[in-house]
Length: 360
Image (cartoon, rainbow, N blue to C red; front, side, top):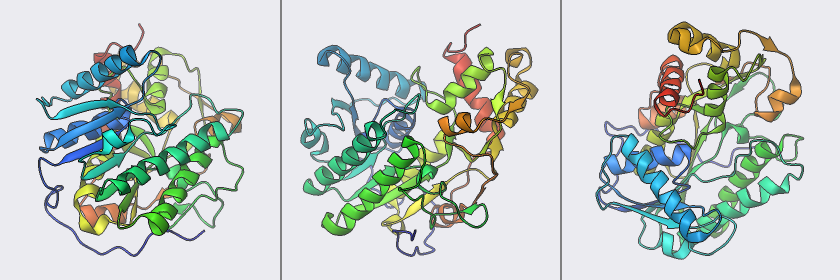
């Protein structure tokens, strides 16, 4: 499948935010999520005003209040005082309600929200439809409100899950949405393809930039954990006697957030997708060994062996082969350098201990 992006220039710059107007109002979808909280904190730290959407669960009033508290606590945990620069509103990707109000006055949008299941659904459309339609809802509303650029979090799932010669991957690679992949992988691919198609045909000048991270790890800012950090917690708690034999790319959530901010600011990022990953692929067993080596007794229960189970690998969206991940594009356009994966894993674990999320 051919890439939907246009050629990239070699534009670089010394500052991550040199082309953004400090103080502008920026919308972040999915603000209570793992990546969303880090993006919000980065925007506030760089001087922007932020409005973020949270999805209400249960009675609207109590759900909105709980989500707002969660976001503010996460921002505080990152060491940022938002003052009056953070506005939290309710909006759901499955309905039009609230999106016009959320988008009003915003110059840029970070579309981070997307469903990620703890288990794969029986009906793939339970993931595909809200991911695709929610993305189009955000893009359509952004266009109608004169937003300059949307930066979207996609995934390596949309890059590297179709057969090809060799195991090297970059932004020119696409997962074929017709392949027999797990629903989550298909949902990310279909949503990103729909986004590029919409901007090309109906965008009316709206710019799109897409970040395609591999497995996202790094410090949690609150009790709402990602699937990756749940794996770290399970290892530390001894809930996994063995781990699936699998290799995958790893990227720090702080580096993903930084790419979002740089992608918002840099003119050369318009119309581009960027693979985000560390320098090398890792395995679940490697993660367990890092925890054991550096955390001593606190990691006494981590697994020490692998098992070969294709179904288990599919459940977490990884494969047995060792991918080679080419991130030269993000490095050249943004001057981006990802953190060392050992630092990322240890910072993930320390955040779980600090938040009291690892059961004794």
